[in-house]
Image (cartoon, rainbow, N blue to C red; front, top):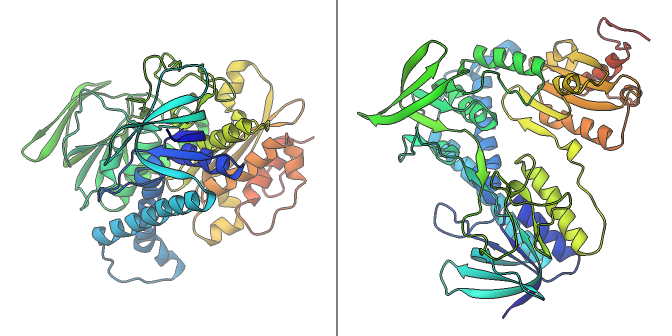
Amino acid sequence: MDNYDVIVVGGGPAGYAAAIRAAQLGMRTACIDKSVAKDGTPTLGGTCLNWGCIPSKALLDASHKYVEAREGLGTLGIGTGPLTLDIATMMAHKDGVVGKLTAGIGGLFEGNGVTALAGHGKLLAAQPGNRHVEFVPHDGEPQVLEATHVVLAPGSVPVDIAPAPLTEELIVDSTGALEFDSVPARLGVIGAGVIGLELGSVWGRLGSEVVMLEALPDFLPMADRRIGRDALREFKRQGLDIRLGTRVMSAAVNDGAVEVTYQDGDGDQTLTVDKLIVAVGRRPYTEGLLAADSGVNLDERGFLYVNDLCATDAPNVYAVGDVVRGPMLAHKGMEEGVMVAERIAGHKPLVNYDCVPSVIYTHPEIAWVGRTEDELKAAGDDYRIGTFSFGATGRALAANDATGMVKVVADAETDRILGVHVFGPQASELIAQAVIAMEFDASAEDLGLTMFAHPTLSEAVHEAALGVGGNAIHMLNRQRK
């Protein structure tokens, strides 16, 4: 029986980060992952690298460049002539990016001494001594491995809904939506959350007429209310037909098209599209992961139950990433994986769940960290806000990309930054400044006293922080000390 210090089940961001860090700390480590690429070969990186974060960003960036060439460069005096669109080449670029990054994880495993095992892993019964994991290779007989510690990181899968059963190429989930070989003339999207917005943006930019059906009455309720309102207006201006408060009743293929019936405030409605994307969220993937007597428990929503340190109820078994509580974000899972590996090695790191940034990679991008104004109001907390528009930022205007704003929320008494919300160019990069500030318990005044280069998009963060105290330089102040 092969014996390891650490066995990680799952090779996505949470799992591979845990495995690499454990190996760096001198532990004999194996990582089991069942994922296979389109060509049938084993692949590392999980959903994020293969079917989620990375391929979607490749298509988002490509489609944005297409729109910019078609509509934006003329304003800058750049003529492009007739544009052509080659979906096959775009998809090949996307697949190439995925291939490079997944191969890179394999190289990191090899360089750090992690044993990669392609196949299915299952945690077996709890018993005194080391833990046992059943490993079923893709092309071999089952075997039992032994480890002092086990880290479960199986990830998540798209949620299916009964009214819209998936059918090959016509009714698809987020994975299928990244593989279209042509631009659908009419595209339906069930769900106007993060995944739905990103996928709808890709195909809308490339020429699809996109209708998005969202069950919730409010747009992006997890984001700042004002930013959600501004984003909805901008996305509608871009051509996305976002219909809130809708309930999909059925979706069926008829004569090569998809007929969707749904209900809204006006009653029963019908929508006919060429393709339909089901993007209503993701759920933890736990099928075949646990023996009945493994000692690991699930909560009422199907997530593996863990404490603040990602320890399960079973001794020496941890769980990280999408399969545990908290936002399903790759960077959150990676930090949990590193924390667990270091705790196994005897260190004392923590993950600060109050400083997990969220990003929607539309254009403009949406990013936030910390608490929203609505959350503070509901809690009865006293706060102050500062805002600044990218339209007053020289760098954004020069780039012809000045839609959006930055909002800083701070405690009224201590001035400590409680949340930062960005809608605008490079929001995914700018939010890191807020995360760093909040990790160091900075006040809005601290951020305002920090020197930012001029001209930069970052100045919008600086000015919004100054605005909390009524001291913004490049805007009229509503409040002054």
